[in-house]
Amino acid sequence: MSGDSPLYCVKMRASRDGAHISGAEKIVPASAVPGTAEALAARALAHPKGSPDDVRIKVERAGEILHLPSLPVRTYKTATAAEGMAKAAELLASDGVARLPEIFARFRETYAMRGAMLLDADTLERLEPDRARGVRATYMDDAESAAKRSASGKNHYAEAIVLATKVQAAPGVIAEICVSDDPDYLTGYVASSTLGYCRITTIKEKGDPAGGRIFLYRGPREQVPETIRFLEKQCVLVEGVPVLGPSPEAPETRWRGLREDLDAVRDAGLWRTIRTCESAAGPHARIEGRDLLVLSSNDYLDLARDPRVVEAAARAVREFGTGSGGSRLTTGSQPPHEALERHLAAFKGTEDALIFGTGYMANVGVITAICGKGDAILSDELNHASIIDGCRLSRADVLVYRHNDMDDLSRKLSACREHRRRLVVSDAVFSMDGDLLDLPRFLETTRRHDAFSMIDEAHATGVLGATGRGLCEHFSCGHPDILMGTLSKALGAEGGFICGSRLLVDYLRNRSRPFIFSTSLPPSVAAAADAALSVLEAEPWRAEAVRRNARSLVGELARLGIQTRTESAIVPIPVGDETRAVCASAALLERGVWIPAIRYPTVARGTARLRAAVMATHTDEEIRFAAGAIAEALSQ
Ligand code: WAQ
Ligand code: MG
Image (cartoon, rainbow, N blue to C red; front, side, top):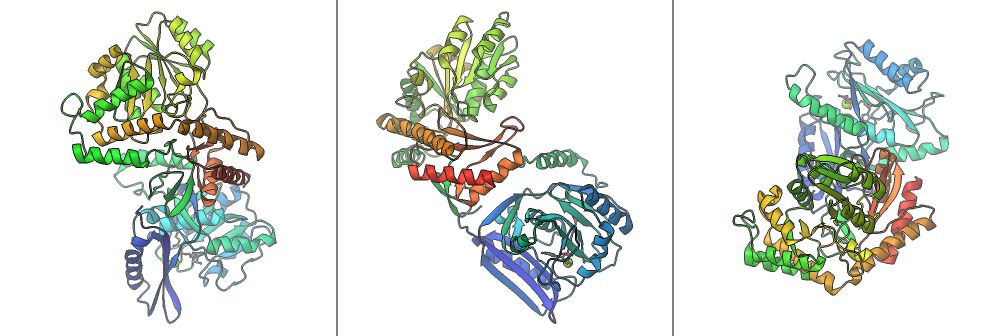
């Protein structure tokens, strides 16, 4: 999304002799308003129902926006209107709606209406104050259009899913049934939050101009005004609206499997959306037009926008250009790369260090270099995905041991004495729980079995230990054989690194495929990380401040009755259900706080959570505010 948000609602309405012809709306960033208005005007003027004598385009600044995941879509093929109506009745009955023949008989009353009938599902009383007009659901769009495009042509299907998704989120609405009033559009649907959006391919006879919508309501009468306000005023953006596939007889079968997989993702509440941050990410950031309190960044020490770090990167860009030009082994090694490696080795107290393009590549690169067929890797069950992928790619035997359980590790190590090499790998800080590896026992166990020991300090560097040197400093104990870390979190840049003995690093330079076959980091990125390391050395209070903020968030949450714990910058807030976690994250966004929901496959199914991460520069007041917002979001 462009940097010039906020969002605007653009509406079009066309009529002739006072009679409605067509209408449409879009929610778009400011930059897309002129294009959208033009496209909607064109659509009004070229409507198949005839040319209007009055076209109104209205542009309004959008209010608070509620983001909703799209209802999942199922399609039922029917051949006739009667079969379609029977299918609609069957679906609604399965969802607990009674008196269906009577409800369908009410359809006639909706034909002249511009809006929908709001019908009490049990007493069959109409609840709309204006029965001639009905209730109109407005202020809604596909989130994709808010993100980028201006109005495209009419798409019955996408517009109907957006409407149905919003309607099912309205308080007390339990189901909807819709028949188009376009004489050539025979497809209709029924929707509910349990059924999803059920397309019924033929629900009326060709040429029949009669159509309408019924929203079924079940709830207290006092709530009806709020339901109507929600339908008519609440701004909603619907995320993950499915793209209409080719009809079953279309030849493009190769895409069908992908679409089905993606539908399953959506149905499980696991659809992913990406939000655009339009400013440097600090404790506050501008995200999709709003200033939010950010508790999701791994830039723990707030160094990514530190003037000293920024200046170092700018100087390196001017001196060395933007790209390194090749792999380190061919043309891509420049003084900032070498300076950073010396600095990292000194900081971690090892003989040498090697940098990689990303932390993911560092993990894959070291694990696959050291282990292959005939070797054994022992991996904590909660290790990061990049470690898991390294294990898989190595083709070694992989033994997963119970989380932080050194007795289980020891037993499993005993079972692979016959393997050529044994490598034990663990996160230092577990990235989704915020807890720490028991390093002293880990080192004792791995040494006893003559196994390589490796820890991933992605979330430990800059956070743990009096001066931010990581887990070894935290425990005041020795080093594992392989210390992996990232430049992209507390050091505010990008990349991964390995620290260890000269032998280890020489080996990796010669054997690690991601190192050998990737262009090296831009020199400016290396210079930024180097400068960030210097800031950390000069200002060790930053590491202490992150840990203090994390403890104080845990304390504030406990005061509000939410139990959690942390030993790092990461504060997990357990939720359980995937969809509930997404809703809690959305409710936090409405309160101006950005904390992402973490779901399967990042964590096990049914253990979805909010994952808060604090920075050194969050204030006490911001931490208190965030805790209050979390408590409110979870009690919704
Ligand atoms: N809010 C409430 N009711 C509305 C709204 C609205 N924003 N817009 C239309 N209606 C009512 C009104 O009574 C119309 O006569 C009736 O719904 C049908 O509206 O998956 O095109 O715009 O391919 O004709 C279904 C797509 C298309 C099925 C439905 O509805 C599919 C359609 P139409
Ligand atoms: Mg219509």
